[in-house]
Picture 1 (cartoon, rainbow, N blue to C red):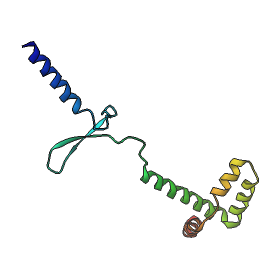
Picture 2 (picture 1 turned 60 degrees about the vertical axis):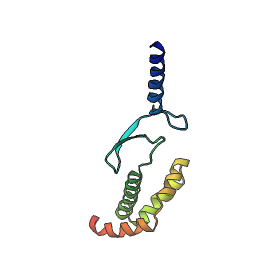
Picture 3 (picture 1 turned 180 degrees about the vertical axis):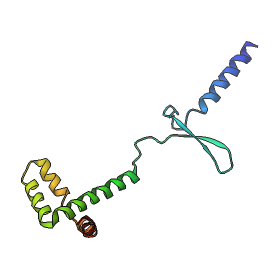
Amino acid sequence: MVGANNSFDKRLNRIGLSGHRRSSGRTLKNGYVPMVGPDGLIVVRRRKRGPSIPFRGLIYLAFGFILFKAVALAQFGEDGYNGRLETMSEGTAVEQASAWVMQADRVTLFVASKIRPILH
């Protein structure tokens, strides 16, 4: 009877570990996500590893930066804006990098032309 319990315990351990190990030997220690499959069964999947890039946030950040540049360009005018950029380009390395990033491009000029009547 003791031998039956030992084999039963071995089977339980094997079954318990098989649900937590993948074929590559990785465990689900990083977390898991229960999902409902197309057949209605709940399936537990391993959580994705590594950083996920928030593309929507990056797009909002880019639009916000372009809008900031366009408002500054519309407010100061093209000559005043370029004068400030020239002053920045003569400064430290950080100021020079900022001046390079803040250069007016086609999109900024277009948005500034649409914002200028609203600001003035």
